[in-house]
Amino acid sequence: MKLRPATFAILLIAMLIQPLATFAVDTQTKEETAASIERHKAELISLSDQVWRFAETALRETRSSKLLADYAEKQGFQVTRGVAGMPTAFTASYGQGRPIIGILGEYDALPGISQKAQPVKAALEAGSAGHGCGHNLFGAASLGAAVAIKELIAGGKLKGTIRFYGTPAEESVGGKIYMAREGLFKDLDVCMAWHPDDKITADVDSSQAIVDFIVEFKGKAAHAAADPWNGRSAVAALEFFTTGLNRMREFVKPTVRMHYVIQKGGDVPNVVPEYAKLWCWIRDSKRAGVEEVLSRARKIAEGAALMAGVESKLTIQGGDYEMLANVAGAKLIHANMTWLGPIEYTAEEQEFAKAIQRETGVEAKGLNGAVQPLEPPKKDPEGGSTDVGDVSWIVPTLHLSVTTAPEDAPWHAWPVVACGGMSIGHKGMVYAAKALAATMVDLFEDEKAREAIKAEFKEKSKGEVYKPYVPEGPPPLPKD
Ligand SMILES: [Zn+2]
Image 1 (tube, rainbow, N blue to C red):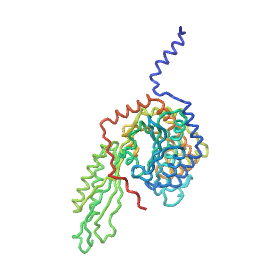
Image 2 (cartoon, rainbow, N blue to C red; image 1 turned 135 degrees about the horizontal axis):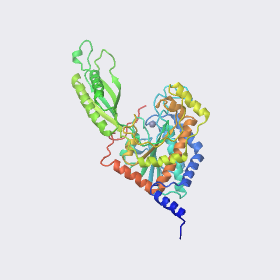
Image 3 (cartoon, protein in one colour; image 1 turned 90 degrees about the vertical axis):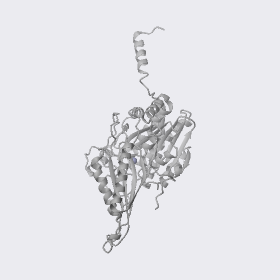
Image 4 (spheres, helix red, strand yellow; image 1 turned 180 degrees about the vertical axis):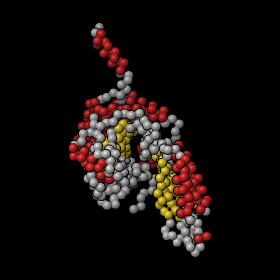
């Protein structure tokens, strides 16, 4: 067959371009996932709103986890409850064989930030918890995406297994770390996660590594005036410790963060306090940096005890790895979010957001529903840690962020709770579900894309043996 020069040139260009287009786009299957999410939208919003209303904190998420697990079961998933020794952790699987794609969901709230779905600070229930990190949206969106994929597997359009992880207690205990230690992620090909945010991004940045520990001092009680020489003050040691830690701030890398609260510092002034307790977190860009500062903190605790003539004990309670970002995965996500387009907001939603921004003293620029350009990874992450970091060292983990709150307004605070319980949060949740599902279509269908993601993970995690910070056994359940 003879080709006309123009046709030949087009073919030649197509052949040259093809190897560069690593990721095939199966728009039709993606449209089907989006349609599934639209079909289930009312249910997903209801799940999210119920979890928002329950506002259960770490390891108390009994109703929230049951709600999501029951829904998954009703959708035909095989649900295993109470995994890794945590009653509020579960997995929900559908399908058979490889690839096995995981998707993470969270549902824990933060204490003390109850808030109505309105743009002025007002507690829904004074003193109660609230979803100040948007985890009600996190769980519902991920489950919605998992259901959309499940329907395609059931219809014979995708082959493999989809597994949703109900991961409790992200905010304090780090449920995923216990699940990771139990080996629950190790058979995955790729894992997906997202987080509510004030922007839409395919994430290439890491998070901070962190260690969470308790320092206790034990001294001797005595009458503080009658026989103080018989006493040895645990509070004196605690003060020496915090002085040492605070002096050390000058001599650590600028990326290090150290913060603590004093949990026990004596009862009355006329008794020499025999017990003192402090809860401390140390963070840095990488786990190795955390380890270094932690070893210095240990010595400071010992030195403080020596000076006060008391005993010290440092107990590690937990900690997260930094996030191992995957650039190949972020490119895939970015392509899918570009395909989805921006989130459109109504004038009322923009006004709601601006009212919050005025109320919290930041520029009233409203909501940002645009998909942000894919940026090169930053050298050091912004402040904050997540137990998704631990998962990312076991299996390639792709992460995206979606707008659910006004730009620049305080996080872990009432504005996020307010937006998470109304249409701004709902729109972000539905958008996240669609972005996750569309990306997972690629992960199921495009072996080349999957292999590129795995190769990057292998290269970046080379030589690292995963060692979780958490102590033996399951995390202790809250008592009340
Ligand atoms: Zn969060």
